[in-house]
Image (tube, rainbow, N blue to C red):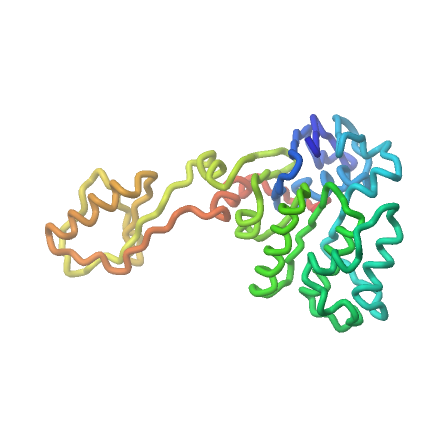
Amino acid sequence: MTIEVEGLIKGYGDRVAVNGIDLHVAEGEIVAFLGPNGAGKTTTIEILEGFRKRDGGSVRVLGVDPDTAPLEWLERIGIVLQESEPIPELSAREAVTQHAAYYGHPRNVDEVLDIVGLTDKADQRTRKLSGGQKRRLDLAQALVGNPDLVFLDEPTTGFDPSARRESWDMIEALRSLGKTVLLTTHYMDEAERLSDRIVVIAEGNIVARGTAADLATQVNATTRISWRVDPGAGAATPPSKLRVVVDNQGIASISTDDVTSALRALTGWALDIGVELQDLQVRRPTLEDVYLALTDDTTPSTTVDG
């Protein structure tokens, strides 16, 4: 295991920010670590990175306790912070070269610039780089030490849709390099697209873990079939076994985990009596739906940690 956490505890005064959690990340995995503000997410990450002391539990990162890790251990991890700003007078190549000097055996700078898609901007002053290009530079600086483990803290916050998707390609490239990645993000589509597994923390406790499909099963998330009621249908009603609910806007809906059977019964009924199913939609639960179901009732009122 690249990350092994057992019973991790961290408190601030009277408040327990991390309440005895277990977390395991295998070599080569990309794991999304999700949670609302104040859930204990940032505290956990900072303990794993060696920046914050824990109050209890066992933590091993790359086989080493971050509390007592030697300097050589730091060369094996790469960190992309949520916010950073390069020295504006340096070129992209100079900025990465400067960072490479911190390591005993760094990767070739031009090779790293190519990995993150900055070859054509290598001689551009960083003050002239776009937001997305600066984020690529952040990743280049994290990779130049050739780390085994990369922490990505909300790597695409503030990006436009095009820049986000370019960054996704870049992050997925880490998989082909054999890197282990622990990713934090508030974008559910990003977590679902990039990660092998998802871990959700709320109020200092792990409340779910697994694939997006696994999480949907844990909260009994169902698919919603909806349509607009035809005023001309009169008193005609679908079969009672479908358990149709009609809201005050005239939208009828069915919640089901057996979509095929429900659609067959619904459309068969509509065809038999000549009812038009206007604006028929089938909406499967998204990861965002599942995430909100997992965290909505547990979001803390006081924020002491992101």
